[in-house]
Image (tube, rainbow, N blue to C red; front, side, top):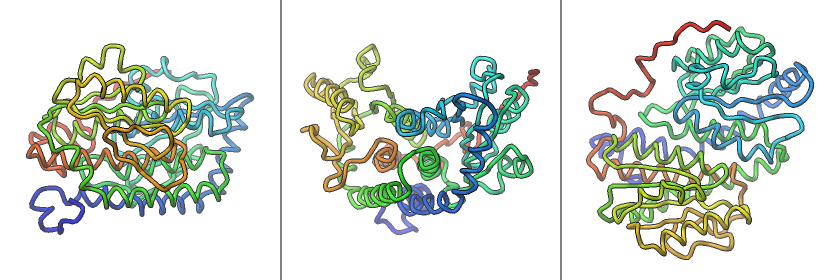
Length: 388
């Protein structure tokens, strides 16, 4: 797909999605520059937010769908790579905040609401900000969005409580979020990771090279899909649980539900969800580089592979010992990355799987919902009045 000409891809209904997956390494380099350019404004914003009260500041990562999974991917890593003396990181979907704000927000807890939004036009994105602003006594808003013209960015422009950071090249035009997911993940990680700027820059350049490698090794990804399968599951640990959820959503979206999907943590999968696996199932496991955590990812790989219940059991991994000796997509020759950054080249592998699978089942990746009942920007949502 990545080597096809634009006309061929357009005839397949796949030109937009293919290009947006492939351009991510360049977007990650852009995102680092956006972070560096806005560093003074970010530090000033966070200093003001910390001054709202004593103790740790509650940092709530929020979004809907893929934007929600950004927070699910970022928060576990930042709980040890961020400054835990200053921040308490919590991923909470906008759909949860809007539907049950008292269950998920503490009005007496100084809070930064970090809103992730590709378009900034989803009703829940706007309502979550409005509800948090009315319900939480001391609140600030950090908006990470890809659309300068979106309502989230425009309506926050004059709010002294808000800082909006824009990643305009990541405003995906395809149905499925790809670069918007990975760039919002990266920017939020860069903001709160305590690593030095020099280290962050080195990690970003490394993931960009690894992402370019995914594009070059498309044939290896295609080989995973060579059999007759109708189910795909993704597993991982730590930050890769959120990554697994986003990966299964890409299969679901781009194949319009024609391939069944599941996701879970590597350890959690045994507790019932493993019943999903049969001889027409592909099982992908994202291998964490943390030595302790990696043992559990390797355990589930070896268990399912040894049970011989799946059509294929595939590790997505760096060549950090111990590696899975079975079928794998392995990145070799790089320094071992922390999970917050490794998630990005890993998601490119999963996005490529979803793209190829969409074409395999006869769908059009750029417009995968033939009935139009599932939309790029959600429609049909009623936001009911909330009284704080």
